[in-house]
Length: 177
Length: 288
Image (cartoon, rainbow over all chains, first blue to last red; front, top):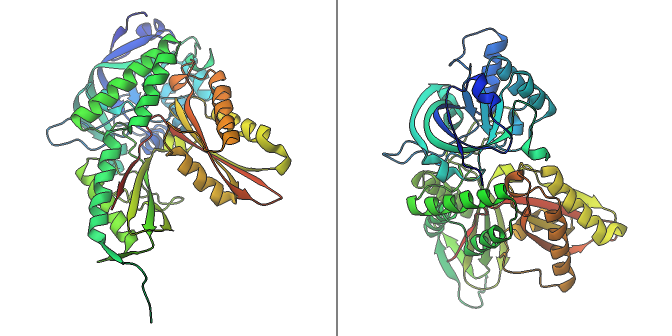
């Protein structure tokens, strides 16, 4: 089996173009958590040309809603949630410069074509592996939407966060082989 | 006058609360032995490289969760509780429903488990903050004990479940087609490898209930009826032929098990419910 590739964030277009569906990747750097409600708000902000809580360009959004952290721990269990619920918002975020997404499961035709258009990458993390993935998170900083509780946006510093390239910039798709 | 034959046993509501709290925590940190056994067996049978990688990560995750007492999955579920109450039992010191929900409140806080329940499903969708209420199924049995089974059900897989009423003449082939189609449509979304709970017969709510009960049946057993056991095996083979594979990355193992439960039904119908469960099949029981 091929060795994992190491990636550092932010994810430049040049780096993204080098990824192929099926590659195993270890992400290092910062990723931003956001799921259902945070997506709705981000897209509303883009549509109103308002200020976004963070600069999306070349960044990675991770679809997760972690469990509460124990005292002294950074984060609780934090595996990926099903991506399809974010499908209707994703093309707009990609259009705004988002470089990559981590989730799980298939994407809509619109998302697939937007990934190709904006040369962005969709990564899959192992669903249900929240305890393992929590060990890869080295810090957590609140960014926006506190009222969303476990669904709020946080910036996570990750080390060797394991994912698989699910859809690459060329339309290569691990779910459609 | 009420005459009581046999001995009436009192069980305190507080005892139920404590038991439910402990079961919530246990279920979310450790999988039952039969489920781990099936995952290990599947790991040996998986042929694809990425599929093998998935199983390796899955097993590592289970070890870390148990060792460090971290929930296996961040979706710590909506809690389904099956309560079997012996008819000689008298619950004292509070209502059963309150005792169970209090147990969830305590367990989810003490165990650092995620609150995933919203109060109103359509409009406001405000998180209740303590993962209550549970979905409680109570049945009266013989004897002087209470059996509690706590099932934290994740919604990645719940969302992919389906129910239909087939025509009586559709028979086993119709059932097979509906179950396999459901798994096919679900694809990568329910975090395969899945456990497929199937409820057949009764009315629609009976079929749905049976499918949930099928999901928590031991994976070391088949349905005691030989014809149904055979159907379970055949459907599992068909599902694994789909090639969806672990996490939908293509591969040999799409489901770990197909469990069917049945009930008599009406001459005019054939209800079939498919409840998909992910491999993180959490459930824990206790007898009080």
